[in-house]
Length: 66
Image (cartoon, rainbow, N blue to C red):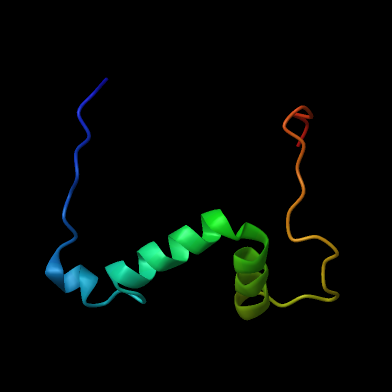
């Protein structure tokens, strides 16, 4: 297995970020553990809709057609 390389974010870039590292990790965990609620909230906050969706996400791992 290859070595994982981590690169620090330059301080001047981090200072301009919309969220800090702690908030990022909090949001990431929620996106994984409560995906429908998290992504539904993101869609409500950042996108405009003609009509609201019935399901936040729907997929079938057996159907590979996109």
